[in-house]
Amino acid sequence: MNNTEEKVRVRIAPSPSGNLHIGTARTALFNYLFAKKTGGKYVLRIEDTDLDRSSEAYKQNIFDSLKALGLNWDEGPDVGGNYGPYKQSERFDIYPKFAQMLIDKGYAYECFCSNEDLDEEHRIAEQKKIPYKYSRKCLNLTKEEKDALKAKGIVPSIRFKVEAKELIFNDLVKGELKFDTGLIGDFAIMKSNGTPTYNFAVVVDDMLMEITHVIRGEDHISNTPKQILIYEALGAKVPKFGHLGMILAPDRSKLSKRHGATAVSDFIKEGYLTDALLNFVALLGWAPSDGVEIKNVDEIAADFRINEVSSSNSIFEYEKLNWMNGQYIKKMDISKLTDLALPFLNKYNTSKYSRKQLEHIIEVTREPITLLKDLEFDTQYFFEEPDYTEVKDLLNSELSQEVLSKFKEDIKNYDFKNEQDIHDKLAEFRTFFKENKGYKPKETMWAIRAALTGRTRGANMVAIIQILGKDEVLKRLNNI
Ligand code: GLU
Image (cartoon, rainbow, N blue to C red; front, top):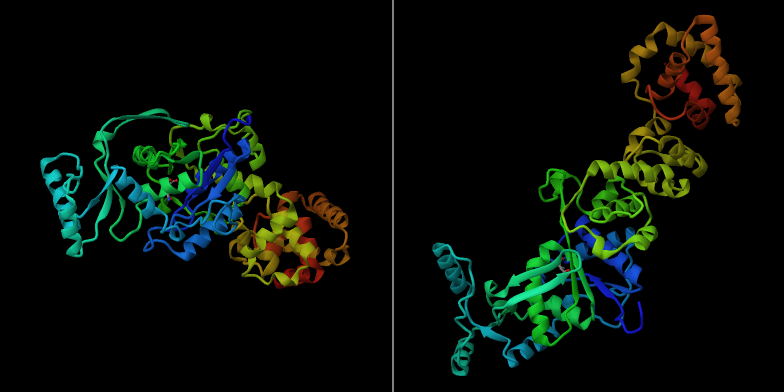
């Protein structure tokens, strides 16, 4: 970027009317990546003008989820910045001034129509089977007529006067887009309660916050012509727009809770790692140039180009996310992973183990899991008595009885502090039964595993024996 080019400023503008959706997280990530790549600023603005639907708890969830993903903002409600306030509800005094300016310049007008009047207009349009457009009933009211209506206590809304024309803009993702603004109809910019509509507030804020690129979901494409008309009327520079394809469920319907988690906080609760989630979400519309999909956010930023983002919809493959999460779990630093894993083990008394032992437990159980919540089941026998229901027959077999009765004696001579010793002695044990009885090594081991864990599969036996310790191993063998 040379000095004559403007400094990139992007924003993410969630409405706190729900927990942070994974789609909004993707939008946040692409804005973040674009800012990182261009050395620009990434701004968080909370769009809470709809006070009935907004809540403090959702706002907090948005903050926490974005932070958990590492998508920290340069400017925002909590960190401040030179373009604040960053919460629309704290900007209510700003919008009427600009609405008045548009009225003064002839781009907007007061509308006294009641909801009933407008419902009636909608009904007639429906009856005639024509697309609805406001009738412009209030466009040419005289000052006297307006004063008379106001004297009756009717508070007007403010409508933007849409001139019919062909509006063309070059979308960063979708390329050239054309609209016939004649189809739009005059739309409200201020409600009669004095609050701005979304389309107006977003333009005023993006203008005042000097946002250069608006990167958001394509569900906003139909708003863009309205917003461009407002920019033009305000005499403001129109930012560049980039509309990302939607994220669909595997069945190609809108992603919803019936498909699985949709809020970032729910994914985290299920045991998805935020790094895996972020990596996966980046692949919804973006593809790495070297084909290597597992990448951290810095590597993704280095390779990210907004104009290469796919303009089509992406499918949210939960199975692929699970696979990717498993990959991250396998590779994660064990201490960090243990920190993240412990909340998923809170039904157990984990304090009976040292931190080092807990790390060992996680280390030997992480291999096959895809979600941290799987650890609860997979580590059960380290914390509680095993459940023998599934292995009853196995334990009652003659082979098992024989193996376990010798094991009970031999184990007394194992050096529990020495993993190699446990390993070697187990090997000798298997060889003994193979040579003397013809038992397959895996049959011998099944009997031991079943007795100590109640399962036929699980973590490495040497590790299990060492972690349980001599007393617990003997106790379990004696209980069989
Ligand atoms: N508050 C809007 C939303 O959550 C933001 C739209 C925009 O980015 O302009 O969808």
